[in-house]
Amino acid sequence: MTAITDVLDSSASEEYVPLAGEPAAPTGKQVAVVGAGVAGMACAIRLALLGNGVVLYEARAPERMGAHLHEPAPASASDQALFERLAAQGRIRCEYGRRLGVDLELADLHLWHDAIFLGIGLASSRVLALSGSDPAGLVDAGRRLAAVYALDDLLALPVPQRAIVIGASRGAVGMAARLKQLGAQDVTLALRHALAPDGPEEEVARACFVRVRGWVAPLEVLRDVRGAVESVRFEQTRLLGDRVVDTGGFTEIAAHAVFKAVGRAAGAERDTQVAQQSREGDRIEVDGCFRTALPGIYAGGDCVAARLERTQARRHGLQAAQAIHADLQA
Ligand SMILES: Cc1cc2nc3c(=O)[nH]c(=O)nc-3n(C[C@H](O)[C@H](O)[C@H](O)COP(=O)(O)OP(=O)(O)OC[C@H]3O[C@@H](n4cnc5c(N)ncnc54)[C@H](O)[C@@H]3O)c2cc1C
Image 1: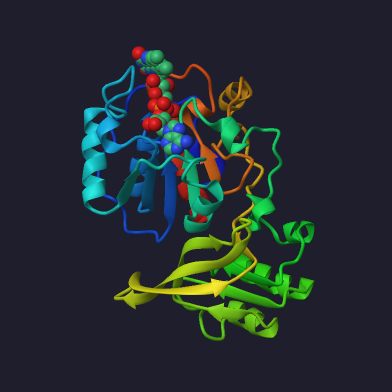
Image 2: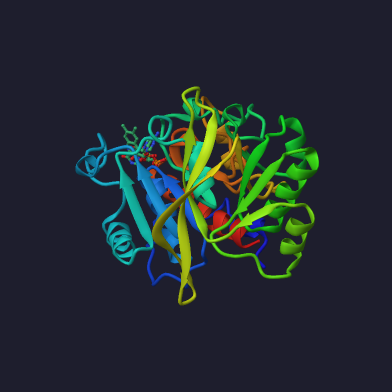
């Protein structure tokens, strides 16, 4: 397997290298790209070419997309054409008029996607509280919608009475089991498909009295008037051929807290150029693989480094896509 540090080449030429080709077979992973600027567009295209599903969230409305002060379009004509082809093939879905921090929460995005790339330009790093001094750990734990990165993190939280853990990975099953051991009364493991019958995950869930609810995909976290988590609305799924698809049916599961297990970022070698730049000003700090302090969340372009040119912002997006893909496959 390619080591993550092999993916990035900080000395890479800044020259424009056109993107081309057909998308690889679907990996089953879904990545949120926030910001349809140079970095976000490049990241979305490469992620889709690598076989990942991409949802692109952009603050501007579609009719305002060419209205940058300084550029007629966020991508070159060839990138734009490839982007449109991938969108027509259903490999990239665009949601315009969605502004992170206003009508889109980072914690919700985290719940719905396997990884997030932030390409939001000069705006918003303070709003997102992702500067380097913020500790890795929980996203939005204060509102009890938490993304927990390792079992030990659970010890820092008050144990909820009813919890939902989303995911089918060994980490998710371990987290559900740990919540039960810590005293949670009712823990549901919710997953888009079924656990393998009599596999190790199923065995752990059974032994720890974790309720397994298969064939559901999270749609929305519902809150009470005080903003506390009340339940999660799911769409029911089913198998169509070898793909898991939504059925159009809905179900709700009550919970006081929702968790999702994501891998803890490995201590990657830092790209000194990116790391140096990302310390300047109010930028999101990233490591050499464009990972932020929060595992599963990456950033690139103007929001991590000052005074970039378009080709550099594009390179950030492309390299972040490689890193995200490699992390998701690891
Ligand atoms: C005035 C000016 C002139 C420049 N001239 C040149 C030049 O001549 N040549 C050159 O190579 N470079 C130039 N640059 C630099 C170049 O434009 C940037 O480096 C490049 O655009 C950065 O790309 P990006 O994707 O990081 O950010 P952007 O291109 O700024 O894209 C960010 C995107 O994120 C969206 N967004 C922002 N906040 C949110 C949010 N909260 N939620 C959802 N979406 C959000 C924005 O609407 C935007 O579409 C110039 C920059 C400026 C400011």
